[in-house]
Image 1 (cartoon, rainbow, N blue to C red):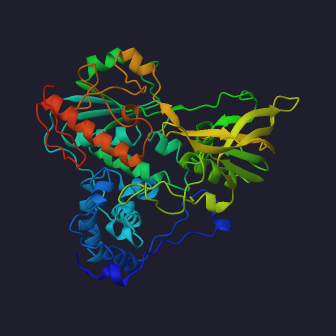
Image 2 (cartoon, one colour; image 1 turned 135 degrees about the vertical axis):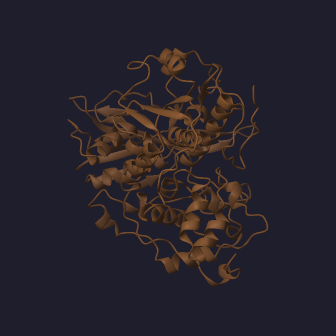
Image 3 (cartoon, helix red, strand yellow; image 1 turned 90 degrees about the vertical axis):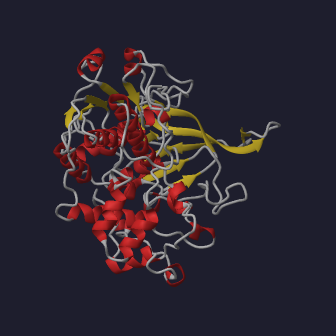
Length: 489
């Protein structure tokens, strides 16, 4: 490292954010970059560890110390090259990844970790700004093989780009009217502006990838055509089957799944007109679910002018710091506050929703809930019990269910006849190939609901499997998490 004493000399510095009152007036990103001098100091905090555990924290195996050092040395183009060698979309992960690499940072044992995510984001943004750094990298030699990728989320796009760079002709099918999957219609603009997706699309089109939006494989494009027209197919349709809450009153007007709500606002931000759009303006809003999707609903509701927002979590409030059962370098389940939660919310834990009550017109007016206590049973499993006398009633005009996703939609796998796992995900072998030869799967469709960084890893790994299937071998890059390919298996 260029400055081996940097971790002793410089403190962790966060990027400045617009004040809450200002950022609630618009839908754009509100975090400003650090100055180059400040970012160089943050890169200098990297400790030249004998074993860089940040590598194990990151599924992609990003060469984090390398690009920390090159930023410190003001070698930005070299930093961008190192970053893109392992991550197809660092401008995305630099914004929406929870940064498990930072939790695994050696400096995090007794100090604040290196600002890895911030450095990654600013390298990626610099690469976008500089002429030529985002230039397409078309394959020197074409293989003559054709691959269909179904789904244009991070897994599908990463897989498509890797396959195109290996020389294959790739067509990406997307049932929505725009490319990007949940990156486009799930993540709000204030977390990630969509011009970033558009820039990657231009790069990928320059590498020979063809995009076919508004094509729903199944209803619009017969699945059997895939095996006839393509040498391989990759299913990367995500885990879009949302977890519902089948309780009394669920059918009332005003109770919606989170993605019904978020997608509409994202379409409006794209310039579309959404008839009868779901809005939180002036309403008492309740969000059930304390994760990222719940926070996205919260930030959206605050920008729409909600009167008050409550966010309930079924589980108990986590501790503020690591406990003995959360040892470094593993990801700790500790109390975290998202940028949306900073913007104003009544947040509560250990709450169970019992029923929804509507007015005479069938529109929700109340949520009835109860407080919980969690106890360990004889098998050591944590069980919830209702606290006697803790029942409560809360006014509600809009309830958003942000309870996660149970798995992929089953229609396309069933039409293709591919085998599923007991968890309801698509079953694959060590090469990411399904039970149907030549058909592969990756991302949340194979893994189940997970992080964007894991989706990118999945796409890259599936591309290795497809390339090996088509060519008998593969030279596509591996990551530390890669398993050996079983050619012909």
